[in-house]
Length: 123
Image 1 (cartoon, one colour):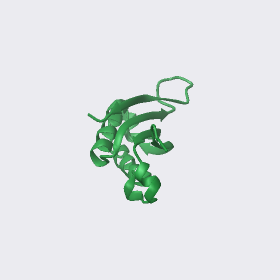
Image 2: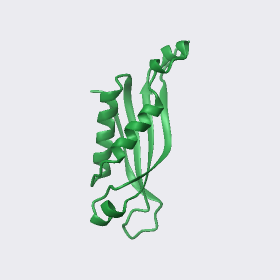
Image 3: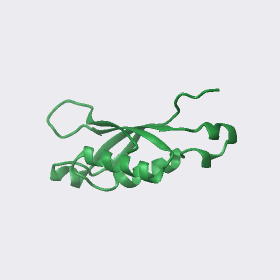
Image 4: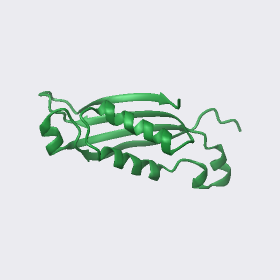
């Protein structure tokens, strides 16, 4: 079998964190959602059935939780930190696609969420 591409994804992960430009946001906090797609060659894991031969999404979640716990003004900064750390901690990751959304941002609009999305490859 030829595997053209393989991905691990985590969808709609909910975090409560203290990111935002306004002082109120960093004090009160807000809900954030992350959607993550990681390009990982896991052909060997298909054969071995061993978590060591892939990227554990439980370990990825732990990394996300740690990074979301570090307050930042900009969601762009949070995404950049997450992507850099994913590449550093998991050598098998070839590409990262991440979407980070803030629920009901304080901007005087009737809006579910606002956020950022980025796609990057290993340098």
